[in-house]
Structure formats: structure tokens, C-alpha cells
Length: 109
Image (cartoon, rainbow, N blue to C red; front, side):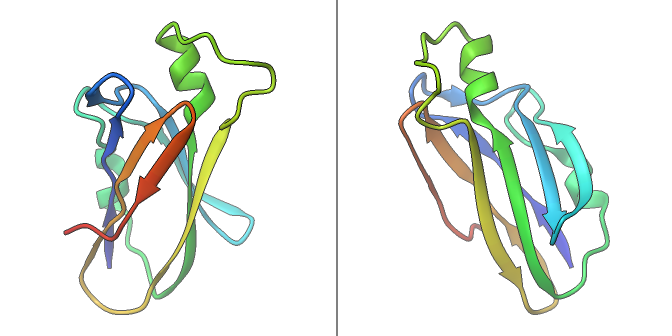
């Protein structure tokens, strides 16, 4: 199975370029990387994943601070975690639409 993500900065209407992210299975970090200029992380596609429960964590507060956002301390959203299951063959796409005060996700294609 393969995995991809796409992060969109809904506060500014742009792809979330250079956002840190991690893929975990349990407590094991399987991947650490950053989004590219289009808000995607191509390194995830290179992983060979098996059925199971995974977690994508996105460094949201660090990203918005790097863009000049004036966030409170502590920020409302610091790191956003998305727990999801991969149960069958094929490709899984987990997008994140995010602002400093809210986010949404879904299973994309």
C-alpha cells in the first residue's frame, strides 16, 4: 500500500509549503519530512506500508509562526495528529486543510 498527503493553508489560501510532518505506527516513527512548495510530501510515496493503524502528525504552529502569524502561547493548534487505518491494497491519500484555529481531513483519492 502507498500513502500521500497534501496540506493546504486555508488561512492564506495557499499550499502549506515547508511544514514538518511525521508518520508513526504505534510509537515508531516511520518517516519524518517536510512538505514541498505544493504542500505535498513526496517521500511518503516511497514507503511500502502494510495494513494497520497509522498516525500523521503535522507541525502546524511552527508552520504558521514561520509565516508570521501571531499565535498565542500556547497555540490553539500546535501539532495536528490524524489517526487512520489502512486495510486494503491500493493507495491512501490523507489531505489536511488547516488554519491556526481549525482543520479538516478526509480520505482523498
